Image (tube, rainbow, N blue to C red; front, side):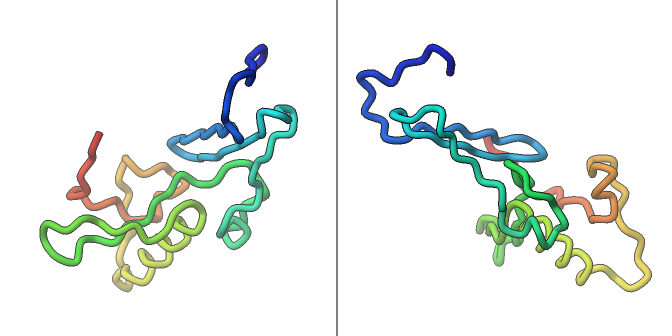
Amino acid sequence: MPGASAAGSSARVVVAVDFGTTFSGFAYAKPSQPDDVFKLYEWPGASRAGAKPYCKTQTSLFYAPPSAPGLPFQLLDWGWSGLLSYTQAARSAAKPGGAPSTSTSIPPQHSHLPALDSGIPVRK
């Protein structure tokens, strides 16, 4: 932040996180070198997804349903890798000749993917 001072701070690293609805990223710097900001451009799965190097990754989480009633969903993958894993799982689970979901809650670029199960809880 312009004009901000790290004087008196014991922080060794300052981290910024941008958790967005479509893409998320982070950057970090040492207070002693505030102009030397580090960002990640090569995210796991990005090249397999055909994505160009970018400072953000997909805000995608791929969950497995509970193995028994009352158990939580299990996070299997995230980011570009999560989107690829979900796409592969959806394709392998699709019935031959079945039409893809066209739910209005799915963005047009992902309309070929089935909608999320309505039983996934939302917690605040």
